[in-house]
Length: 436
Image (cartoon, rainbow, N blue to C red):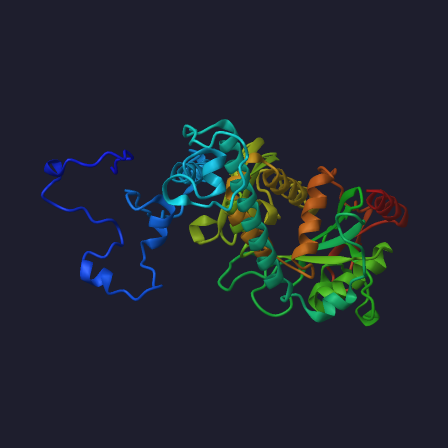
């Protein structure tokens, strides 16, 4: 360390070695040979801190999260000011320039307070909360980006004819929208499920309307065997409502439901039964309350299909079990059940999904859920609109389960039995649905 005293040094006390400062030329001849006016790499430091300064300047690496939590960056300015005051003789006089060691003239005005470095602060609750908030915001932003990208990919899978059949509407979060949810009976090749198709035209296995947004939240399921007239196909005569999907795809299904109920459909959601279990699993499973259920689909598990045995009560179902429950047509433990029972279960499963989406534990799974949710459906809604739909359904609470109740049975020209609904029953159901 250099001595600030003006007293001459005792030559006999000098060591037998010489100390070179960082950046100093070690050869006197090289230093003397430097042209006039050319400054060395260490001249600025000598001007600032004096010829005898023992200071060395190092460039620090970027500070990480732990260093910031410990407050290592809070006093950086104070440390710099303190060193400059020391070099300039201290106080306002040193800053004014000319006095002190090196005559350093600082560009910072005096603030009239002590600039000595303060004690390093440790981890405080305030810093912890600050970085927790930053982490939460980053996690939510990542989830949002994944959701928007996934939804935009799925939007392109809806046919143009289906998009053209939909009525215009406002944003789902602020305006009431009627969303048609369809699930076809087409299954992967190799399935043994009775009544399911693996290629060619398929019928809509699930038909549900969901009114959401603008303070509305209501659902109405339509049994697939409900008999209707299909618009533009009078030659077919009365048909089950799920036949419209087989004849003309989702576009004709939309027109048939609008004609039958007298309401407009604003958006379409087609459930992808292949990816539907992945959404449930991403959520960590869902809770659904059921009666006694004994179901075998596609020949049961022993034949490569699905088997489900549930006792009365609330069950935590994974993706495969939830899909099996949603598709159960025949319950061997209760043969009296029909499509109306299945429609109710499907609404209960939707309520279970919604309940899990809004649970605190889902926050830690949010990026995976955000990516999987749009992939479980095909819809005309892009990312922002679909996000508004989910937000509106979450804000609106859980609507009661409603199913369009048949008032009688009817035999079709092909000999199949269908369900008929009286005009009064239909109007009452539509009125409750539109009221939300």
